[in-house]
Amino acid sequence: MIIVSDTITLKAIELTDQEKLFDLMQRIYLPEYRHLWLDSGSWYMEKIYSYTNLARDLDNPNSYYYFVHYQSETIGILKLIENIPLAEFKDRKSAKLDRIYLDPAFHSRGIGKTLIHWTEKRLVVSGHSILWLEAIDTQEKAVVFYEKMDFQICGTFKLEFDLIHDNLRGMYVMYKFI
Image 1 (cartoon, rainbow, N blue to C red):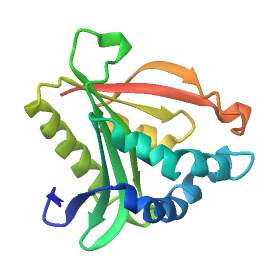
Image 2 (cartoon, rainbow, N blue to C red):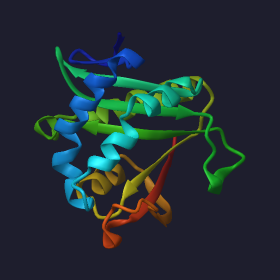
Image 3 (cartoon, rainbow, N blue to C red):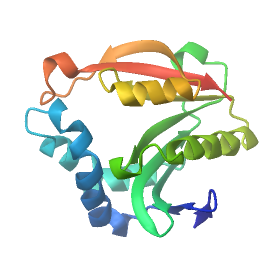
Image 4 (cartoon, helix red, strand yellow):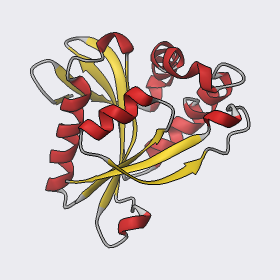
């Protein structure tokens, strides 16, 4: 268990947690992102949170995947991949904030901000100077949050998933110096 603050802790996700992870993400991902998908997100959930994919994620020695706990309640996930370069800054040691999802009932409590600050401190200690992520360009609340956290847009691309609505495939690549 990693103590982030008086109220926030992280617990490393293990392969035996796959069902718990899947159930959590059904509860917190789908209400916010279901509208993106032709099948309401079923394919994405099976692809990203399957046993096979979780095993692959956990097998990466640079990947750190956590359940986020607020007080004693599991309210989200955080996944960080260290030593993954950002094309625009190939000469800088970079890490990707690959996933950060919190239960919408816990938004606007400073939890996301606290998690990003914790992530930055952790990365600086290991010599990283850039933290980057990918955000769906139509998820305005998320983009505004990242901009408030000093992330800047440095690129765009389109998701190639067949089951996402064509007009909702846009992604931003965002980064910040740490």
